[in-house]
Image (cartoon, rainbow, N blue to C red; front, side, top):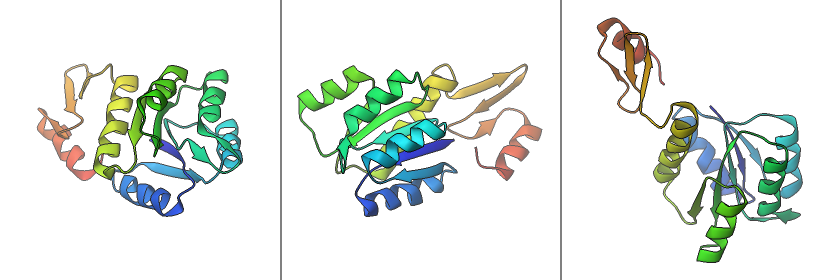
Length: 155
């Protein structure tokens, strides 16, 4: 899973990358408005984390650009703006979720997982193909052979 983090607070951005990398997410970073717009125009992402207060522009404009380009990326706003009006505006223009700073990295990770589950796995934790079944969250299968492989890799 590929994630773009558009966040000008470099310490926070690097901490997010470090934390999400332990879950095998591939993370890229943009530290200002211009870099964020450039990255979304050049690459495809499964999820984009967007701060609203960015040097050079407003994070809401990046979300509008994502929607204008019909990109299928999930969008989570990460912002110090915690007012109800800001949250409503962000969700109305197309964000899938809104997380107010400061936040726990574990909560961010679970929200990303939930967003991807809704987009890719029909809103279930279970992936089924024929008679094979994997519980993605528990990382378990009823099949012993499949469980062996699940234990060898990180899903």
